[in-house]
Length: 396
Image 1 (cartoon, one colour):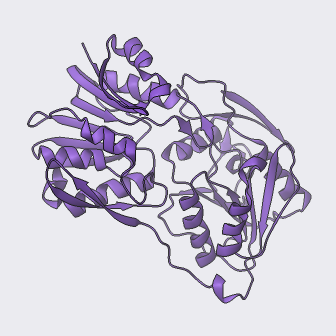
Image 2 (spheres, rainbow, N blue to C red):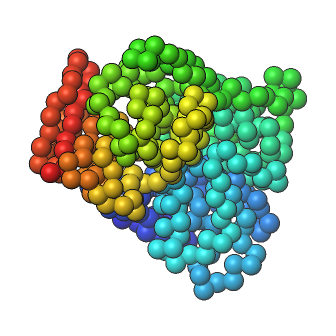
Image 3 (cartoon, rainbow, N blue to C red):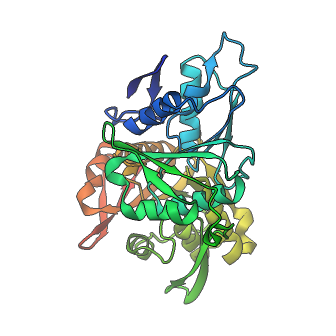
């Protein structure tokens, strides 16, 4: 959706990313973005030499605020580091900077595994949906930036709970909140406390746990970085999917789409070591976890694997693979939406060879069979229980 974003003296048009999505009703910015920018202006927090560190800017509402128009001299622009685990968000920010004819040369993009700049004097923090990612990022901030940094977090008021504020208190320091404005709220933290409990801390991530494979009668050691689902054990959906995987033909070309920690692809590779498998996800932490899990458990087969950060299967060769396995998400950040599943299914139809199979798992109520029939012209129920269905579609 094209989202006119008017705040202070800037008139911008922001797009959600990816552009070619079925659900066009979702806005590319929210009231928390607007509240943050207005607060920066009202309190005159931004100076000519400010070093700004932005976390989890979804589509560039915050980052674009610090970009000048292309025709203006950007030599003295404020230096900004934009930290995000999402490949799609990084792409969306770059796209919106370009579409609004802004100079984004002062914006440096970092994923969550890269070192933070030590000289930041302002941190703008959109609170992530994942509690684990929140903890990981707060620890990194506390261990890196100056105690005199100005720290402001923001989210929808209904998503800022007392438990959320306790995490800010625990990992950063004394915490206060604003009143709600347009259903958004700000969180302010002081990092200059001398409390011993606020000394530098070791991140608890990645976590490690054991996954038992019944078919092979062996255990795998699984590592999960902070923003990867199922951090302590195999989730029930993943277990059900693995129990209902197809019999893999030797030397098949396979894709684990939306791979997360890679346990589905790992299971395939363990059962049929001749396959060539590609892991795709839009999360930096997911791809890192998947690669680590293959390296740990099947190091002799790592050369048969490729790991890709991507927006679904963008630019992947058509008619190139035999099997795609997918557990599609039904949300993007805090928005519940099926447009990612639509894109995954459409991309899969294009990338599969004739006769190739897309096999998915989903919650029963999501009715993915309707989408599969519209795109593939066919759909088969493989297995079901009270919560999940495993379905298959063949490219004719």
